[in-house]
Image (cartoon, rainbow, N blue to C red; front, side):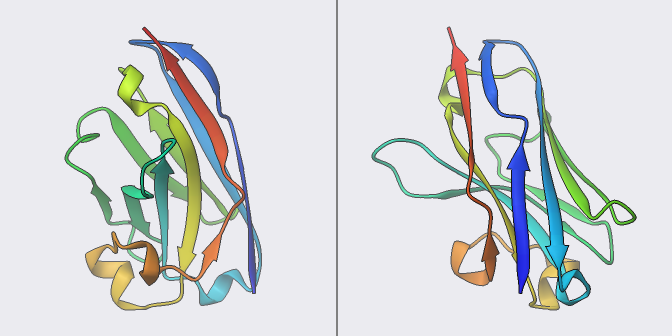
Length: 128
């Protein structure tokens, strides 16, 4: 079992930046990939970014490419999502997720069902 805790959400004006953190604990050695998803009110949970914990390879949704950067600190067992040039449409609850599927380390996994562990979410609100 892996326990994930997100932090760093908040209210920011359009064009601003935020950095989300996801701290992992438990059997983290069984985690091959970490992902970020977001869910706006009334909408389904959508993929934002992912990173292979053993490869460092990163993957992004088209809507955030060039604005968001995912990174990991294996020593600190933490994954980050640096968000820049934020837009009102980025407003959502952001979730961190972990997967034990080895494939995800090298090719990225963007479907929620490919992930085994989830954090509780952190709210990001971008005002216009």
